[in-house]
Each structure stands twice: as structure tokens, then as C-alpha cells.
Image 1: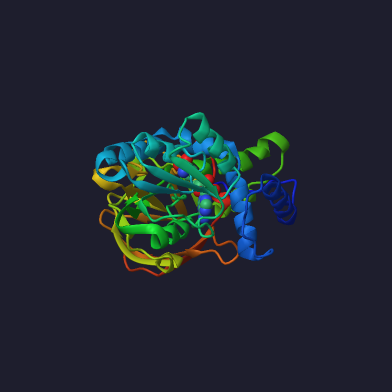
Image 2 (image 1 turned 90 degrees about the vertical axis):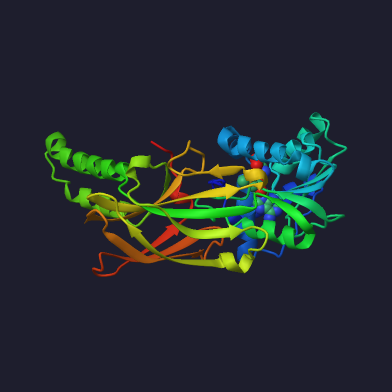
Amino acid sequence: MSQISINERNTPEQEIGIMKRKISENGTEVVSNGTTKKHKNDVEYFLSYADVELHRTMIEDQKRTNTYRDAIMKGAEKWIKGKVVADVGCGTGILSMFCAQAGASKVYAIEASDIGLHAKKLVEANNFNDVITVLIGKAEDLELPEKVDVIVSEWMGYMLLYETMLPSVLHVRDRYLKSGGKMFPERAVLHMALGETQWITKYEESAFDFWVSLQHLYALDMSILADHAVTKYKDTVHVHMVAQEDIMSFPTVVCDLDLYSVKAEDLAEITHEFSLSSMGNRCLNSLVLWFDVMFPEGVKLSTSPDEEDTHWQNTVLTLPDCRVKQDSLVKGTIKISQDDSYYRHLKLELEYSVDNQEMIRRHFKMDDNCVESDS
Ligand SMILES: C[S@@+](CC[C@H](N)C(=O)[O-])C[C@H]1O[C@@H](n2cnc3c(N)ncnc32)[C@H](O)[C@@H]1O
């Protein structure tokens, strides 16, 4: 999970300076390639994760945190007890400490942001110093002293792929996971369905009411801004919960990732052809995406609209309103790739037709503007 925003008072260059200073004061090491774009992106990203509030948001999501805990505890006897674990992106070290509670003989807790300094103190405060070693730096740059039996990581961003953290986990997997070793989670599935999302309709109604009501208040006709406000809301990505009854088709699987074999290259661009059949006479106004991840021993974490909310919520792509009938066919292709200007953001290219009518093409950008509070 991430809110990729930097301190508004500083430019990215100033932030880089601050981060470098912080790093040298702390005596830890970060590999720097000067101020390349990727490096700047990473500096911004890891600065956001230095904020304890972000870790609170994740840990407060009890469904998330308890599912990881259940998976570790259920798999304790078979996979964790007496085993060597790497926790990629340990944050506060909470998952590493669960592994220590489950009897791991050694845990390498890897963290690139300054929250890792707090993880070190937390490990000490909980008397896990003999089991957990916190390593501060990017997972790609660190040397582990041995191979590991298990990799634990909470790497999922909004819509599964936002943040592009999975390649870092795969890097550790390819370098350090013993043959036959276990991944927690071991599979990730991204789903998508047609939506008649009510909060979009409500937003549109309230925009119209507001701009039209100014006639009475100020004797001015500002109603044309209503159209503008509604149009502005279209073709955008929103992180927001969707009510179960707003889903108007069975879902399609956009990607199903086997985390033992998937490669970073497979993630750079994901293309999925879909054919979704609508249920009922309704107004299609969105595509709704969510993900599930699966752990060993049958433990599953689902962020579906059918399930209890998580901090990942659902991801909603707003579309032009279109009336559809029972069994109308919405056919098309969705392509998800990394944004050229910030590889942790995403670009979504969509083309679709309804009942074989003309093809509609839409482009979306998934960046920090898409993250909003639920209402
Ligand atoms: C979603 S948070 C999870 C934190 C913690 N594991 C938890 O479950 O509460 C991901 C963490 O991974 C760290 N991270 C992301 N990419 C990393 C990388 N390449 N190397 C080291 N840490 C990384 C981030 O700084 C962040 O603290």
C-alpha cells in the first residue's frame, strides 16, 4: 500500500538531499546512481514509507494483517518452524515478528525506508534480536549471508500492481529462495467486472444540483460547469469501495500470477481480452477491479466487493454511461503497463464495444490522484 506523495514543502531534489543526509547520519547505505529518474522515483517512494502513519493504515487493516498472521501460524509447523525466512519490505517488522513467533530459526527483515530503523528497535523491544536481523537498504542491493526457505512479503498495491513492488520480491526469490522453498503469498489474481457504480451517479447528481442551484443563490447561470464537472470525472481511476449490488457481471481474470514462476518482464505489460455479459437492464458506468492473494495451507486474502473492506478498497475505471440489457456483451481488451514518467504508477489502455457496436477507446493514468477516501 502506498500514498506516493512527497513533502509538499520540498522539491524532489531537496528531498533527495534530505534523504542522503539522513542516510549518512544513520550510517546506513543506499546505492545511488546519481539523480536518474528511477532513482528519484525510488527516493520519493521510500520517503513516503518512512512515515509511521502509512504503516498504521496498513496494520489497522485487520483483515490484511490477520490474514498474513493466520497464514504464517497455519503454515508454522510445515513451513516456518526452524526455517530461514526473508521478509521483503518489512516496514515495522510486523510480519518478521509473526514468523519469529511461529518458530523461524532466522528472519532477514529487509527494508529500504527509514521505518526500518524503527523495525530494529521493535525487534529489540520484543526480544527477537537473536532471530531477526533487520537489513536496511533496497532488497536488490543487499547481500543475504545464506539462502532462505521462505519469502514473506506484503507487496500488493492498489489494483494489485500499483507501486510495482513485486519485481523486488521476485529478485530476492530468484537469488535466495532455496529450491522447493515457499512464497507467502504464492499466487495473486486480479479480477475485473462491469459496474453500475452508485457513487458515480450520486456524484453526477450532486454536481448538477450544485452548479444549477447558483441561479437561485447569486442570480447567475453557472450550469454549464455541471457538464464540465461530470466530464472531468469520466475516464479517471478511483480507489473506492463498490457495493456488491453495483457489480453487474461475473468477473473475468485479468491476470493470475504464480509467484514461484512469474518473471518481472511478464509484469511490465499485461494484456487481457475480455467478454463480459451484463446481468439485468442497467446503466454501465464503470469497470471494477479487485484482487485476491493465496497463501500455503489454503489461506486467502480477498479484496472483492463481496468481502469485508480492506485499505486497498476496489479500483474503479469510470466510463461513459451506457444502457445495457440482460446478457448484453461487453467485449474488449485492457492493457496495464508502467507509466513512462513514474514506473510505480500505471497506464491503462482500454478498448471495448457493447453488443458489437462501435469500438470505444479510453486511456487512464493511475497515480496518487486516484486515491480518495471512501464515502
Ligand atoms: C506494503 S508495505 C508492508 C510493510 C510490512 N511488511 C507490513 O506488512 O506491515 C511495503 C514495504 O516494503 C518496503 N519496500 C518496497 N520495496 C522495497 C525494496 N525494493 N527493498 C526494500 N524495501 C522495500 C517499503 O518501504 C514498505 O515499507
